[in-house]
Amino acid sequence: MIEGLVKSGHLFVPPLVVGTIYLMSAGLIATRIRWMPAVGALFAIIMLLGAATLGASAVFLRLTHPEDVLGFAEIWIQMAGTLIAAIAGIAATVQAIVQRMRASQSAGERS
Image (tube, rainbow, N blue to C red; front, side, top):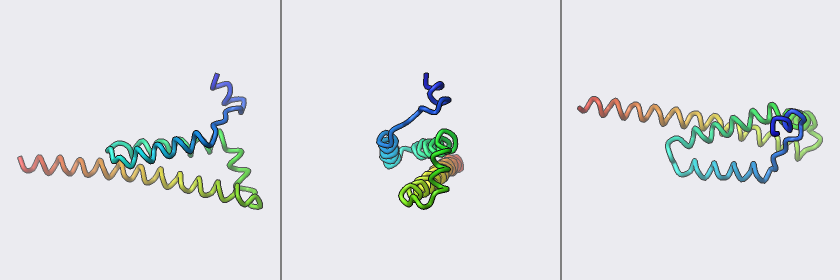
């Protein structure tokens, strides 16, 4: 059913649902569970891929019509923020992995 909706261009996720998921993922990341930055980065990457595939026509329309100031500014802010979130999530995940590896190496040297 969903595959047919996506192919016919009728898939619509309300902004309130997307915003709620954003806030929930931000809250989970704030809990400082070690794997949550990876989840946040994955969510941001999924949002970017969705904008590039399913929402490409709407994104392209807003980016090419700067006279619609609100739509133009909104899409630039959203895409920049999502890209920053993806990069920051990946960087935080790599940092956590490196710290864990260093901690295990230093514990092995003490033994």
